[in-house]
Length: 299
Image (cartoon, rainbow, N blue to C red; front, side, top):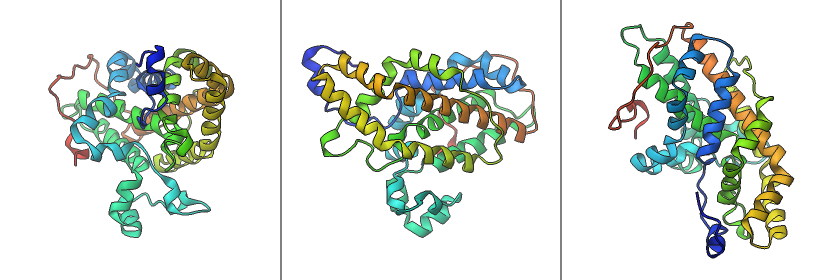
């Protein structure tokens, strides 16, 4: 985290966007999702490995971006504004190839592929869970569940659903400021969010993900306006900025954390059921430091 010493304040307000909730927020969403799951063999597996699961929920930012660069960066967002006015989400096809054919592969990649990433990892999780006992790889299951937690969490950060991911000209640094403030307040926001987290029945990961992204997109201008107001009231002091932002937008941010945990728990449970409700790995998982990511999403 960045120190809040006075000489760093100007730098803090000008830092570029990180394009993700920060680590403690992702870990909180993951923790709340495990709590929200109904009793099941899969919940027991996730609980048994919860600390490692939380660590894995941060790795798409800390590890995968370093390994895969731009190919990984675009998995964390979708600039939905470029898909037209009216209802741009209706222009998205569950088939990434079909969407690329319609809008151009380079455009779709540049505009971000978050909903297809969530679909891809969800399918990968279901396939791994559905393997026979002798073929099932417990480390890969946990890795997929943890990485999926990250991307689902990203879908509930409103600035991940817009081309204005760092606001407008007068807002530069908004992405980092909001996520830094949220991370500082993660424990309190998690307490506010906890009662609203619950596993829902879903029939389609794609439909559930687009519904969440639609909701996130409606909050973009509210979040940017909250940042502007908090900056105006704080006069360059980050502590004051954080208090004012949370006073104005803390309830909404806690709601987004709850929605992220709810969607994640729902997808985990849906994919476990789709795989036939298997028993999952009684032993605690260990993942070698040198382990590479499963190959199905490398580019």
